[in-house]
Image (cartoon, rainbow, N blue to C red; front, side, top):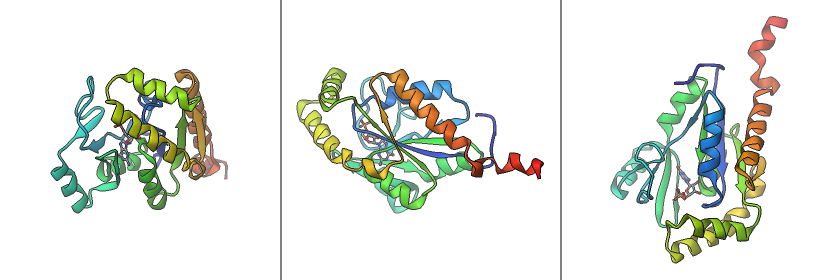
Length: 204
Ligand code: 5GP
């Protein structure tokens, strides 16, 4: 567990179309930054090759997911290309209260729900350099059928319309560039006066 640095952690919401390279960017970011926890979502989707239960996602049945909804255990959830995805409220609340930043990788419907419940969160949207590049990346991943890829591309077009609801737009042309942009956003947020009140008190 990371060292406690501040009173309350920053909630960070990162959205972007499937295939934009969010997982790679996130892995790189987590490797570079201390005091940040990646919220492992719950999903009813089947694991892709190389994905590990409890690391990439908590893979659960539809019945289990519906029980979590009924028991109000989720901060938000959404149905995305025929599967449920959701964020455990308990897991993130514990970290934020311990002064640890929490990063959510969630799609736009879920992000809109978080914005209502947690307006102080940072909302970052990540896009590819072009739509053609997104299609190329989804095909290169070689994990989904043509039908699923078509569904994801269609979904991406709808998601792009939600960008104005976000605070920041990051372009993932090169992973290092995208990580640098996100690092800069997080550092700027940390320097906000309201986040440094504790330090200020000694100057009174
Ligand atoms: P994938 O199947 O490619 O891993 O993810 C599909 C989409 O679901 C991505 O846009 C991802 O950000 C989103 N997603 C992952 N976890 C969650 C979650 O907990 N809640 C919501 N609303 N979306 C999620």
